[in-house]
Length: 179
Length: 307
Picture 1: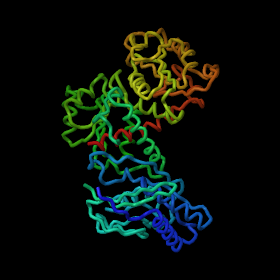
Picture 2: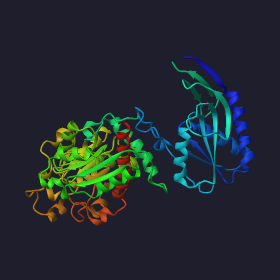
Picture 3: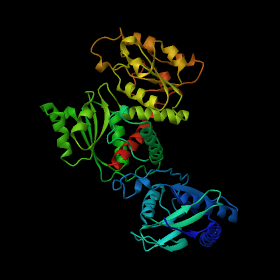
Picture 4: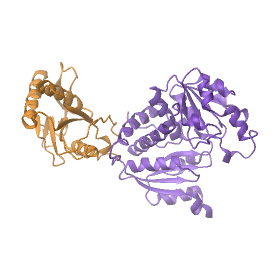
């Protein structure tokens, strides 16, 4: 199995700092903005960004976890169903600006399902999408990210492997060739 | 693993501890869903489910129907009392006719033990047993164990006493299997005539004195006296039953500890449970009903997903 490093720990740190600055540019003091991390793997990234933003702005920012499992369009079409994760949105998103955060944007189907799941918590004023890795030319749906960590050209047969830890010392992102 | 080991839910006896834990974890997520402002998810939108009830039911049937609707499934309801069963149609014919209308899942209640197992051998659709005579009622046992887990953190190591009409109760048998698989200790308690003869072979303790049973347990699951299944007299009178086996506030207050009180419903108030006990802070009867919807959603979701 061939592995190629896309982002290492240092580069990841710089990328996340840049994403935070971009977010602040658009959302000012986050008074009308909430962050939703997509389960399961967007949550770590959302937590990292959330932590950094709170430090930069010196205030509390609302963070929730959104699980799109029950809204997926491939239910009953795959051998083994995807296991559901916790959804925790302890605030109303009605009239708010929402930033959806996921690690990798591939076909766009998870994001579609996530938007479907999100609507159950109210009608947001505006929804934006932040992803760490945008896999170009692989979209099945007309979905585009608003904030991107890094754009990567990949083949469908390849896989992006994200190794994030909550402590963040050994974070690495790989491009893997499947057998 | 996120798949059940079985294609059907016929009884707790047939499923594994891992299956039960997967159902509980999935139910946790559905419990969050049914407490949202919009209580519905689109998972089962291409699934049609028939609720086939050959025996009366309110709670179970409503709970199943609500679970199906919360999952966006199409639902048809069938009850034997106003159907061709009265004209002499067989069970297999009735179900095959329903399936010919392109139904994917059957939720069935039947008065004969083993009826869903018989169906499972002859048809292709997923089957969920919603109670077969005096045999099993798997979703009730799952929601009971789920409610204990929710209240006490886990089921393993807890002491549960099942009190009342054990002989005629499908809830008792399913509960014994579920609780034992999850590592709880189980005791049954009731008048000798309402305890099956060889029940101790299932590995449960048997107690005839209700006060002693309550002193022993962390959770008391009180069962209804099933008068509709009692064709002979098993005890002299309801009054006498209530006197010796009924649970009331005074009895609960005389215990040295707090216990949790459960009942699968419908309650015969003043017989197995007095009103002051049923409505006390010990009781989690209404939590059981809420959890029933979440647990049934999890069962239907997991069975449909593996198809």
